[in-house]
Length: 204
Image: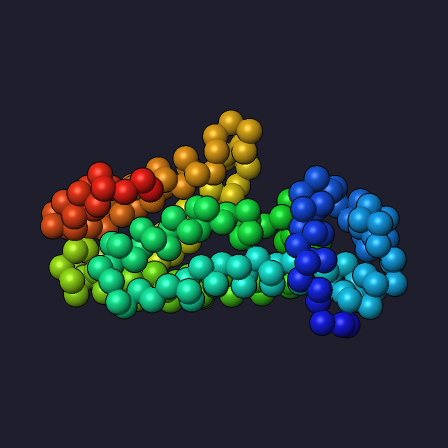
């Protein structure tokens, strides 16, 4: 399989959301995107290979949001605000674009991607929670493992159209509400005062 062409992967992602399982094939995509089938075969090898590359793109887009920002240099609440806002602004890059059930059709690829996402975000959020506790902004009784998993589970829920249909409520509104309830749940009194003051001075 050739090294994936990022612009091609991005273009493919834009066309995947409306596909049904029986429509998803390299041949169909090549036809719809007016690309030679041979290019798709050489680049991805198979439908599973294509799914893997699309999910890898989404994972790297998520990682870039965190990696481009150093949590340790700022107030823990500021760090979580900035990163979470970037997630909200770039959700289309990290939102799973393949809407049919990956667990049924590509279980191994889906599980590998899911495990990577959980591990990466958990480590980042855990560090932020530890930092916030040290800075006396977060509650001292927090379980960093539990809180990091709650953050991830809420992100996943926001992408579930069964819970939140995209045509009824925008992702940004959902994310803002999710983040507000999340951070209020982990802050102590000092942290809550700082958070509320910060929110008044910025548009989140």
